Image: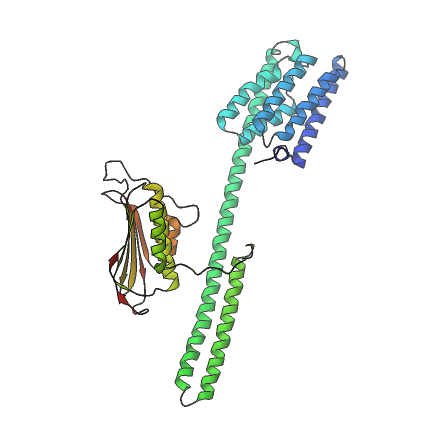
Length: 393
């Protein structure tokens, strides 16, 4: 919760703007006294200063600042009967509203500014007609300037975000190229040295030993370079206070299915085909796809039933998650969109993960109702010992 000090915070620029408005408006007030023959009134001067000091809050509370400035300006005109003019203080307050607020609020502020600024000028209730027209023109000019500045700020911010995204993408490409160079060079060297050691192991142990030493050095160098790149990627992160937990995989699907059931969604888990160990990256991808799909199902399918099927095939592993929520064929209209989650594992994140493993992902509503997410990931044949299993849990 913001404290009173936080709500009243103002910057040095805000102070300079307020002081400048005080100087300009008091100068005009002094000219009015000097050349208009009117007596000096301390109350009117105090109101001018108070209106300008209200600009200190214009960034955090632009509408309240404009209201205070208009009331104090009207009080000044009614007290001193100044000649028709449009002071710098109401101009800055209205400009701040035009830059920061919605069009409806800006229109309301503009409609109130011209009559309130003119109120009491020249000793008349709303000033002479020429003064009201001039102040209305000044109001339009200030609002137009504020809207142009607001548009420029948005375009500048959009360009900044675009340049930042482009820089991030370029950095990712550079790191990918460096990782490719490290893997392509060092792993190839290690493969050749391992092959040479194996070929010379029986008849030339010294050559085999030298090959193994070279292999060890190449592996150590590759590991060091990859750690340097990872340090670059993790720059700015807070240091870990505990060792990282092992990455989850396909063997942990039972746990998130249980969590889904505890969360109130009846979930069926089916494993088909000969179960075998998966590469860590493939297992992690399977886990994340199921995790995000079940999370979306709990968010959008209500109390509907969910089904998770994991299928092991000779050259790939497939995972499918679908729910029985409302869909295009259920009479309830089209199924609601499943947006990407805030944690980065939404539909876009799932597609990226699956694409990195050379797989495919399908995510779409079903005609008979519900939503389906299906991923297929290639896995080298014969990876790990297999055991036949087909179960429904």
